[in-house]
Length: 92
Ligand SMILES: [Zn+2]
Picture 1 (cartoon, rainbow, N blue to C red):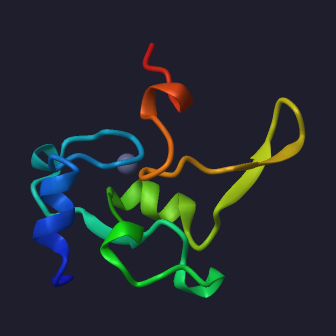
Picture 2: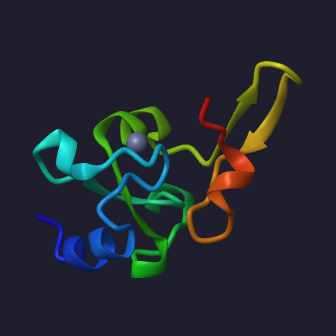
């Protein structure tokens, strides 16, 4: 297990920092991922680590942006340390 797991998981209240799925429901620990990937010069620091469910971590991969299908423009992904979740996501 990642040595930063306890700190990152407690900071995230044991919820995926991207989709807010509760870790408890999945019955196994979520993954510790680098918000800015190491391959994109992200730091291996606690500030750059986020708790992510398997689905979010796989979809994000080593990317920090994607193409918005509505505008067909490149947009930066949600950043758990810089952005407010409610400004980026909507639950219907
Ligand atoms: Zn998730």
